[in-house]
Length: 117
Image (cartoon, rainbow, N blue to C red; front, side):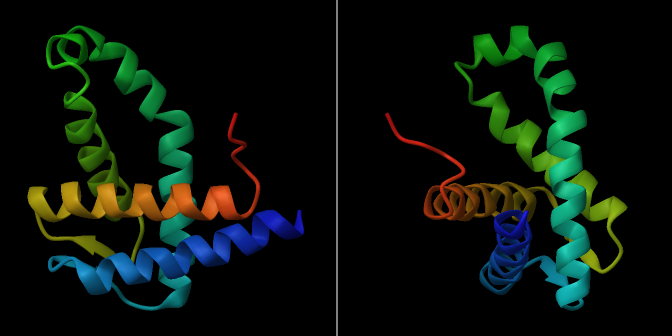
């Protein structure tokens, strides 16, 4: 439980870092970042599998590259749903989702949420 709260806080800091790096992404404050991380997590848990399943043919045709578009759209959806978190367009959404995914992977590896083979 404590590790999950720690991961949530670190992911919020990572989202703030993404907002500092990528022009077009803004976060009002730390509480907005915490809420945005929660919304991103819920979107990835509940909506992303359905979207991946529905777009499977185009994802196969593009050899998986359409997943970047899906991630950007879901990142933008999370920004739409979370107050204080804005994404100013498609390209900031792509770059922000890729950077946040990389930071999330590193944080998950560091906290032991992902195990390497």
